[in-house]
Length: 428
Ligand SMILES: Cc1cc2nc3c(=O)[nH]c(=O)nc-3n(C[C@H](O)[C@H](O)[C@H](O)COP(=O)(O)OP(=O)(O)OC[C@H]3O[C@@H](n4cnc5c(N)ncnc54)[C@H](O)[C@@H]3O)c2cc1C
Image 1 (tube, protein in one colour):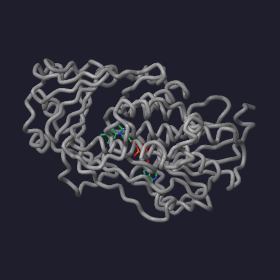
Image 2: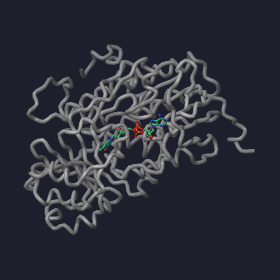
Image 3: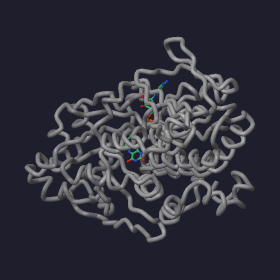
Image 4: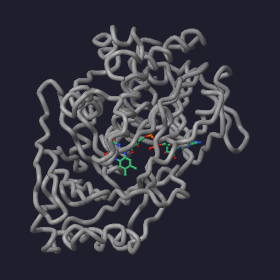
């Protein structure tokens, strides 16, 4: 009989949502005598075509701590070398190498979204001989939960019970209202993002574009117009090229909850970018009608993330703008924190014990995630907007704040003093 068969699980963790936060949590929470179930509403077959970057604070957890580095390399993970900023006439204004200080312990990495999603799923479900693989149940839509009873209710009317429930169900979280006791809507931020991914070989055929940017070179390129911005870069060993084009949000009615799926229109995009020359808009025309449109929304920091046996993580807890590329990275940090604060527990989990640990996760994570949420929002404002700035760090200090992170327990110990002072600590 194998160790896994002898160690029948005696505690159950239900994770609602099989996105980056949910799958990362499934990896972090796998442990002997524990069952991890992921309930995902979709069939999980259609992860969107786009790139996703992880900053050093998260790539070190995924690639080193959890050991996914080699697997991700095999599917074309790329190290980002830095930012090149161009004016719309194609002149390089600034080149900012990404200084991966030795203390950061990792690089900023770019993945195809589908590749990192599939790799996380593989590691959550593969056999390792001493823990039970996570059980991912697709087409399982959760409509609500009872935090004190530790139950979730699915849309077919069935109920499932667990020792701990992790709400990793994204920006439109169904569990959030039950944790907070009231609804919180993600608010439009005044921006939308068109996104597209195309073949680098196709783009290389466009001489005008190729004369300015080498689509296989491992840099993130930005083209800055007045209130328009293109952010683009290579993925999958340079074979693909991803473009995000920001526009002022004129479509307040667009429902962004599962916005990866909403379709963008080429003619409207070209009109939005009519002041940009042909070289810059070449990727739009090459993508033809394979264009997505995402209305950028975020939430204010929530008053809490946990109640009873339930905790919210990822976008459900702290939806943020992508200006700092930290959305998925913060979700990974949440998952690591869950793993760390439940690591020494085997067996049944009394309610008081669960609550103590969920509180510890929240206290370790909240100030940091809220700071990055606010900073990401402030970074989206046009340079001419002189509105109140709540985050007092300059970009270099903020980079250090982001990247000098070595897991939740280490963070708590190094920041104990400011955590004790609560939100009046260092940064607000
Ligand atoms: C254009 C763009 C670019 C971005 N770039 C970056 C980047 O470079 N780096 C970065 O770090 N972040 C980036 N982000 C943000 C990042 O994608 C998110 O912050 C991150 O994916 C959050 O993960 P999540 O698992 O919390 O939520 P999601 O990815 O939304 O996953 C939630 C999952 O829960 C499922 N679900 C929802 N409701 C239910 C329910 N009721 N029952 C069961 N299942 C449910 C959904 O189907 C989904 O699979 C970007 C976002 C956008 C739009």
